[in-house]
Image (cartoon, rainbow, N blue to C red; front, side):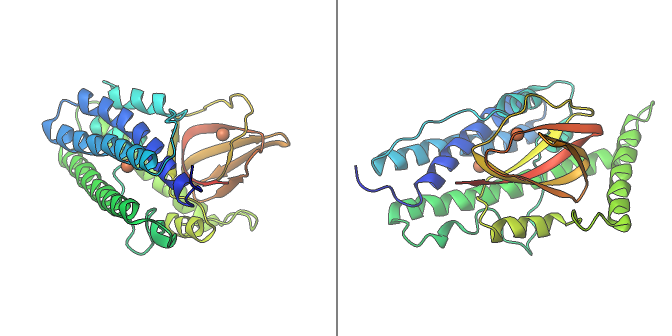
Length: 282
Ligand SMILES: [Fe+2]
Ligand SMILES: [Fe+2]
């Protein structure tokens, strides 16, 4: 077998991540009652599945193999996709999808061609992949924004469920604003998502960004370790990291680190938590 190309781990990560996304997006495409939403979600799901196959094929052509493993959170995300008691708009939010790329910061694919040893066939595949992923982000954002606009244009039904929901969102925004006005402790400054993402790129974190939504009062599970380092930004709510030295609580705009091999467990406070994580594989 020839020497491993430096970009092989990237190809393997893409093959795995795309497969996991295909699983929960397919579940969602099957569950939705709306043709317009199904059109978008099914297209993105098919792209994800095809990316897995295309990258697996390329890895094989290069003389290596890849074991596709299901990520621990995929089953939970598939359950969200298949849920019948969530609206499509809520599914976007729970799955961390529908956001638009901030044009002032490099996106998660911007550094792929920093590796100047990439061969022609892999470069061609990566170029198509990146363009499709960026297009998928735009398609998902268009779809999410259309659903949001539709909801806002619809008068709140009796019981004021939609109004209550909007109030929740206003409360979350206020909570975030208050954190900013109060100023966090110097040891834990508040950063914007754009600053956080720029920091990930600067510090060599890889392309894989995860957004996890924790239900209110999620109890800490078993202490565990990861074979990657994670840097987390709390987007909303109250996120609790249980370290062996004790728990630490983080609120909107605060960051925390979980270096490789650190024993920890994740939990959330009464409002739940929405957390964005950047990963660095070693
Ligand atoms: Fe993807
Ligand atoms: Fe963990």
